Length: 204
Image 1 (cartoon, rainbow, N blue to C red):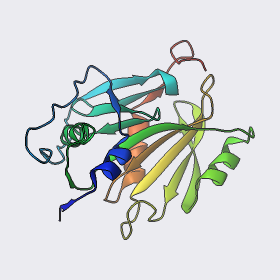
Image 2: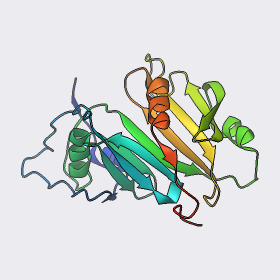
Image 3: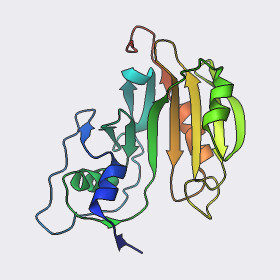
Image 4: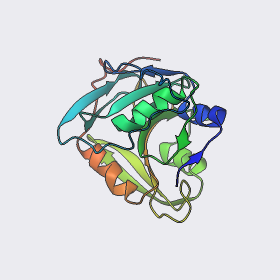
């Protein structure tokens, strides 16, 4: 059931000020009192490649999905309906709250220069399982969670951690949703994605 959320809280969750990638235009604020929400829109059957130089990866995502640069430097990838809603919220318009699926790409500082496995164990609280996983020939770690993100729904959040040359800290790619199956969805994303060549990735 939809419910009215405090605008400031949901704007903070959405990243407050948003920049837009891959030629995406910001959504225009609606004249009504509340944001127009088309709901979640299914993924297109076609795909496109999204180069994230800062993170040293190229993700293959549905061609209709949108990437948003949050003010903390993270990248959020969502369906076009959710993108429209978050764009409107970021302009200060009220909205009815709902859950949504997202892919999030971020970095985690490694100030103590820990081995990647140690860093994962230190930063990944409430994990259920940590497994080695090879991404484009480079080993990282898949982290499966219990019910950290959504209470009562198993496998609602999963992460992949990777050390990439010239990228400070660890790169973390995560999938979350108010639904199950995020570990499988994350692996599917990784299988069709790749590392950028060192010359393509940005330096610190």
